[in-house]
Amino acid sequence: MSDTPTPAPSSRKWLLLPAFAFALLAAIFLLRIDQSLDSGGNLSKLPSALIGRPAPMVALPPLDGLAMPGIDPAQFKGGVTLLNVFASWCAPCREEHPELLELAKRKDIRMVGLNYKDRDENARRFLGSLGNPYQAVGVDASGRAGVEWGVYGVPETFVIAPDGTIAYKHVGPITPEIRTGKLAQAIAAAAQKK
Picture 1 (spheres, rainbow, N blue to C red):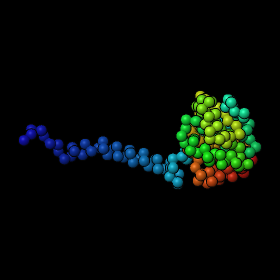
Picture 2 (picture 1 turned 90 degrees about the vertical axis):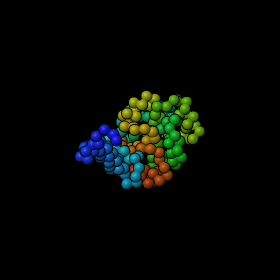
Picture 3 (picture 1 turned 180 degrees about the vertical axis):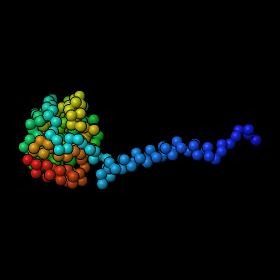
Picture 4 (picture 1 turned 30 degrees about the vertical axis):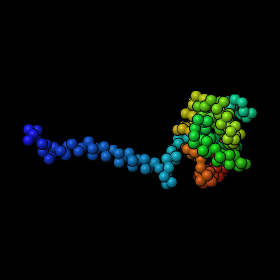
């Protein structure tokens, strides 16, 4: 027999306290995540402090080698603009690209690309191989403009109303369902703001 005393039943309860505290914190964390999910159950609907505010007044140079302008904040007035943040190194950007090409067929919106932390030659090759849906592409090599736009990551898409305010933000790749659903609704609602 061992001479080690066995703990009394009441002192064993104290041994369970750290496990109980961890379980409680995990439950609170999971509850907060669940509350941040939209009804569709995806994490792409992240809050943005920019909704309803003027689009950032950040001019960006054009993508070198493309015969199109960069981003001029004056472009955001007068019509609905979709600003899509993309990069050649972003796999979800490649996945959503067919949806951007479909959106580019619409005559009621202007498509603008914000090339995020990318190399010019890689971005040109990306657009050259997949197609260029944009009417303007601005280069944000340092990521500074991304900070102004409140970018969490790529891809992200903003709907800018004709009055120059941000009407909607989508985080993550655009799927056919998002293009014909939430995004189409956001474009229609934004068009009403003049």
